[in-house]
Length: 81
Image 1 (cartoon, rainbow, N blue to C red):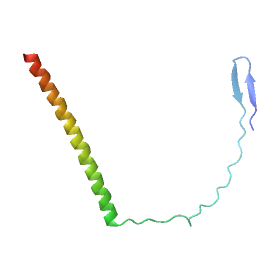
Image 2 (cartoon, one colour; image 1 turned 90 degrees about the vertical axis):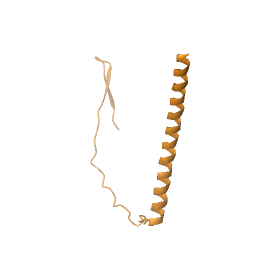
Image 3 (cartoon, helix red, strand yellow; image 1 turned 30 degrees about the vertical axis):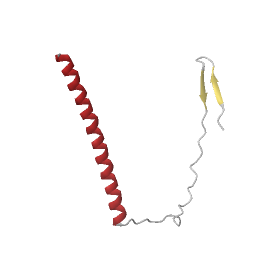
Image 4 (cartoon, rainbow, N blue to C red; image 1 turned 120 degrees about the vertical axis):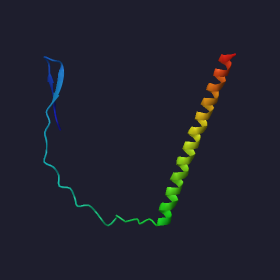
């Protein structure tokens, strides 16, 4: 464990660090690793879901923009009166 050394002149604390050699890493256990092969149907389902989410987000953005444009038109109409 490192032991703090106080530098009284500057009011700082310095640490003496002792490094030890790197421990040998045990070999990885590859018996637990399994390869999951997805079928084309699973991939297609995920792609369709992603496309639906994209369309939903785009529709929501367009609705917000339409509401904003409607509000701008109302304000302009009131300003003309």
